[in-house]
Length: 81
Image (cartoon, rainbow, N blue to C red; front, side):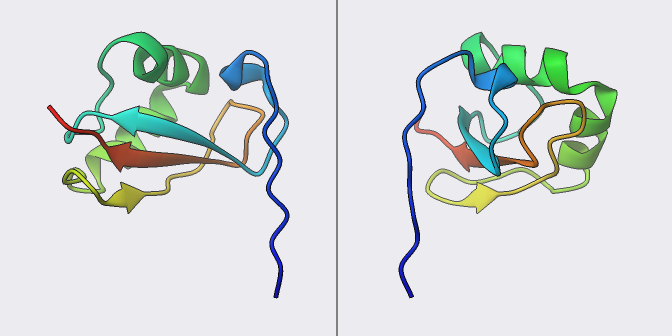
């Protein structure tokens, strides 16, 4: 099975895609930069869903829904400190 991957330039919160990738802090509760922007556009539902995921250690990923984003999902991956 082949998977098509396409890189699309633009404002990440306005992309109509299956998923966007966010390198987040381990809490997944919004931080700075792109993470903060994603959470602010997605609505409080994303924050509530992330609270229920129990964090995300560095090197792992969690995939909540996109909420008010155009993207269907947000792939959060725990980034290095």
